[in-house]
Image 1: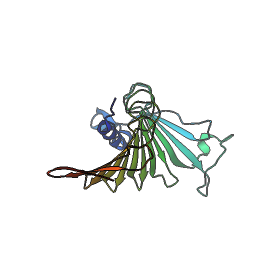
Image 2: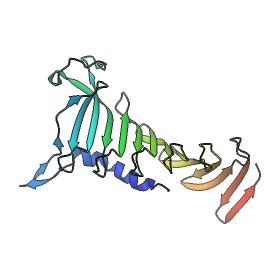
Image 3: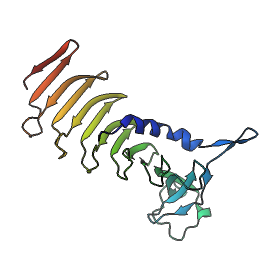
Image 4: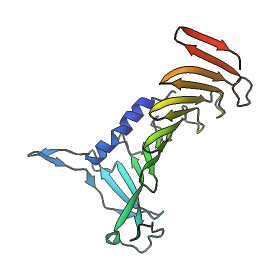
Length: 217
């Protein structure tokens, strides 16, 4: 089963709007905000906040925060702390139930600077994270895809700026790369193959506008 990366990315890109606004018209021009459930501390000493964005009484957005002291340092042990004593927080993780089936479909992890560092998506809606994206400066730099849900990466996409630069394929299902696609300005220009299983390209295919030209190593 091939994964529709476009659909999961479109949904994910809409999240900041959905969760920040996440509202509906309440009458008299007023906007009704998502229902917010009572905060509580988790077993791993984070502050958890829950939101109901579709107003069905069931939370579908879960945000986890590190609690900070007056110097901005994380308080590692929240035992004995009460909610009203929380002064500063830092977002660590956010979980989203995108299709409102009671199961988390997307998880975002944030660094100390609160910039997005990693995103794990259950694009197949089966309860396992099949697409993992890594970010630098809020831009995706690498995306790992497990097409069949066996826990092994079948495809890895690399990005330079906002452009796809390379895709590595593990076609045999063992996680070992045996095919490479190289891109220039968003267009596929070269394909490399590992025919011997040593992880090294030993056959190249150059793609040209008028056709394909195959050459040796």
